[in-house]
Image 1 (tube, rainbow, N blue to C red):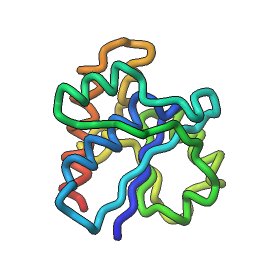
Image 2: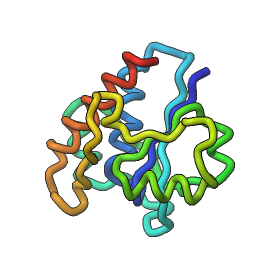
Image 3: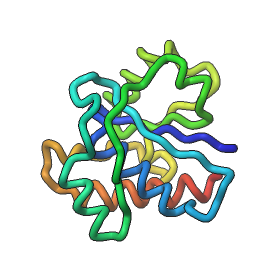
Image 4: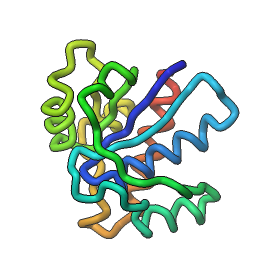
Length: 145
């Protein structure tokens, strides 16, 4: 089983978007487990942002039941890939997990050969642009798997 954890600041916009996009892509596979988490505590227990949930619903992807959870140090040992959305997420992932001795931590767009961040739609309000970047990252991650 390959276990993937997507991580962003609050776990209500980008990381659940990546979680549910990839889950939709691998819905016929039982060898991949996908989840998401936050580096902060601000949104813990809250549902997916309406912008993300609405966009994914229009694409036929449900986010029902998802509540924001925080990344834990123990997640490092539980997951094969821990994927952040931007440089700030990566710094916080490394702080929370205590480092990356096994090389599990990457930014999502690295899988598409890009070093840039995925913009946070909480600030940009452009959920479509975020979706395009998340889709590109997930498609290329899946090719690597």
